[in-house]
Image 1 (cartoon, rainbow, N blue to C red):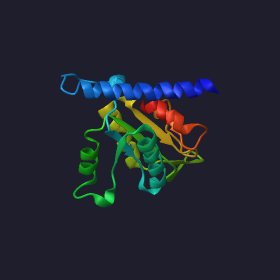
Image 2 (tube, rainbow, N blue to C red):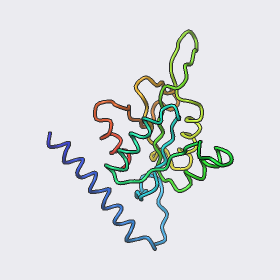
Image 3 (cartoon, helix red, strand yellow):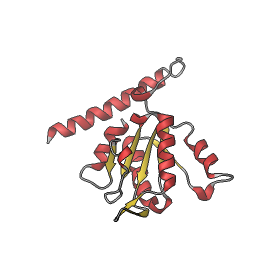
Image 4 (tube, rainbow, N blue to C red):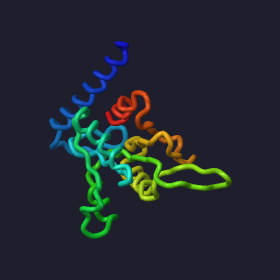
Length: 173
């Protein structure tokens, strides 16, 4: 359908124009917050459980190759010192975040069982929402991962669902 293709092109064009405007105004004193953040090359942090590094790599590849952004991720095997210090330093310059929530742990509660992300992923989600603002954090969740009701209304993309990469593109641009 031609309508969807045109919208994707327009989204890409708007993103490129925002980057050009940002480069032209580099010396200008201004603060960009919330929906007004203009994407730069190195400002998307991807938080994930290392059990699902494959999902992170696919998202990272899509963001880098199709949206022309560089990403920052934390590899705890490369950390010197505390994981928290490495995480806060790695995410310091990020204006947006993608948090990968996948089925890591089985939870048994009130005669029901479900899968949810590891606790560190929830900590990274909360930190990035506080740092970047709610509109600048996108959850990418696996189909079988339960999301707690208090964050169920947040913007999220279901990994590998129909047109999931287009949904992610719209959230980041």
